[in-house]
Image 1 (tube, rainbow, N blue to C red):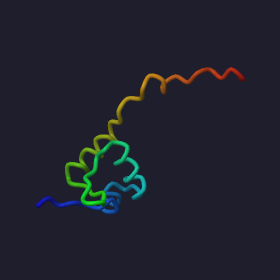
Image 2: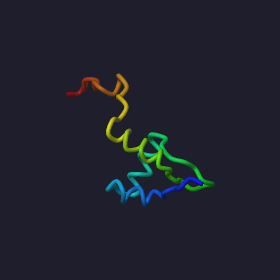
Image 3: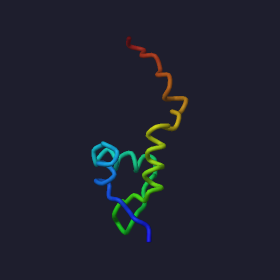
Image 4: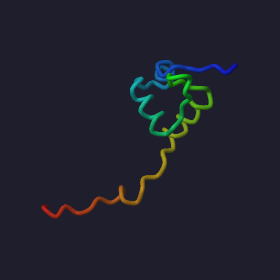
Length: 71
């Protein structure tokens, strides 16, 4: 049987707040649903750490802002 961790346990382990762990997990899809609860298997925690260390590249439109026509 796999062992699951709560977002609070992962937050303590990573030194983040619980809300940050939940936000990042939703953003990167690195969590497991157990019923209606969000839980983390060891693989999920490793994937979350990897995504935090190596975030995906920004889309092209987000890299260079458009010049402000009112400036």
